[in-house]
Image (cartoon, rainbow, N blue to C red):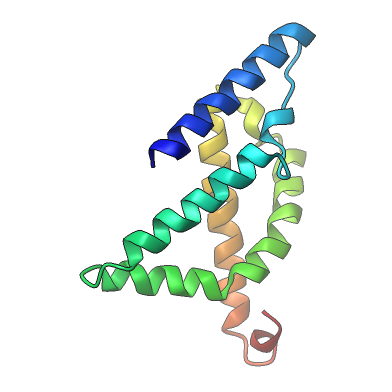
Amino acid sequence: LMAILILSVIIMWITTDLSLKNLRFDGWAYEYLNPLVASISALVFLSVRYICSKKRIVRLKACFNRMAKLSLGIYLLHVPIMILFRHWGFDYSFSNPLVSIPIVSIAIYSITFLIIYLISKVPYLKYYI
């Protein structure tokens, strides 16, 4: 968890530094294929996996298993939802990035999860999720 925090601070520092040098927002450090972002994603996955490995957290483990089964559909649908949100003006720029990025991320994941979950309940379509 400390590594996640440290890498997040490094990303914020790089973004702030680049943005001040360019006199405009530079989101290079937030890009999906950036090694820092990929490292944070892997660390979050490993942290959740470790937490779920504890036997007393059975309900949380079941929830994460459900999310894992739907992950391909969530992955495929999250970009169109992001584009739709950006079209509506609901992206990281509506507020301070420390506030807006988590809010937008949680909203996109929640909506995408709900859509894919509902699709997985349709008898014919559930085989394609």
